[in-house]
Length: 236
Length: 390
Image (tube, rainbow over all chains, first blue to last red; front, side, top):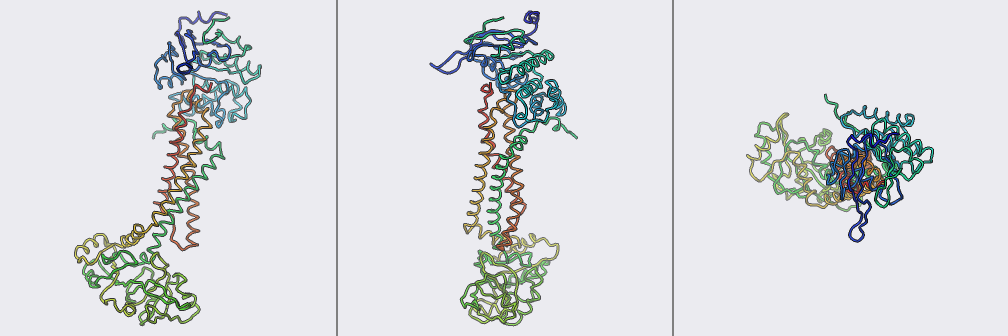
């Protein structure tokens, strides 16, 4: 397998981080979570971020996902500079980023079709029926075309996570962030979900950053980054 | 035609939030409905009581009414010269007049012999008094001296007059210390001021009240030609008549009486306060429901923000929830209001009925209540932090 980094090095990176640091707390309680991190993720790349609990993986993910304000360092996501960004810029950027959460976070009162359409509803300039068609297509892509009208609590864990993937992809993101997507799943279902995630992101030329503890799925990654005490150690 | 909004619509989150939690929806609607019914009842009673003050007034067959400017309400009517009413005939649009005497006299209950004051109306039996044509037939008996028509809906403290009359008994009793005989029954109804009513001829009336100057009346009814504008005629008449009379349209006359009870008694305040209580209770219930609904779905709202939805979109969801609750809660409240009004009417004789302005007023109060509560519940949304859900 070719090194995707060198292959894509001429492309504009999806995520570009330069000496990014982040702190929690104030005064004497101030704690450093991220310690001048630098890295790049290129379009179509699947990057896995791994490391022990509390090493700052999730904080990094929320920073890239434009869910937190950047404190120090440079963070450029899909062409938007997040250092000193406005709320409105972050909200617009979030529309282009698909997110998959540990606990699927589906809306309990919506059917799977409606949940996925919450993703495609973010697309501008499409009619209602086009957005619904998009939602159905995404559910078909994850193999759930028969579960359109089920509420989340009628679905199995793997099905829920697949609906969450469909929802994340329905907004046609250029970057997909996944936080422990297999944590609530057994190993074979977890494997299926991750394979699906990889296949769809490759088809749609979407960069993927996945945070995981799960050593069994490291092999789907083009690149594995190991994090410890707020620093990234290149591994593998 | 532009169907843009159909294409722009999104998943109806507010509607689904409400309908997929039927128990919560039911509690919210029950609360709103309760508040609405309370407001309907209190305001209905208030208006009903004011309407009850004009049970006799609104029966008058008149377009314009002359009263003395010293008259403050039906329980304190002052007299004015009858000439003024005759002068009115000079106007070409006036086709008929009826001088009416109006005062409270002591009635002796023929059974218990105790006395109580009753509203007595005196008029010329050949004149038109009420719009109800039944009266003119019965009024013929009044041409004889000392005869009265008794209001069968008067309170029972005046004696079992209607019952005795129907049994064919000859009813003679004392009115203002003189003997009179009841020769017929009419149906008017008690009002705030008067517990009972009776009608007699002016001749009998003047005999019962010897101190009343014969040329003095309390109310002058004026009937106009069909198609005449009562407001214009009223203006002309009040300009040409001396200041010892006041010209009112029939509507103003009713308003004059209602206004007395509205402004000089505490009835309006008490019932408005009751309605305000309903409003406050409704606010608290809707706020509780919406606040806990937002709190319960906070992670889901945070997820939506993480996906790229604006906080404004989420405020919109809560606002629409409030609006939907208002509409859905109002409909059963309206239906229940109608039902309870019918119940009150049949059991108390109080003229309580739904009218468009009250229906609208209560709707807007409910809408206001729901929107205020939604606005307060929105503050909770600010706590939806998408960084916390990972």
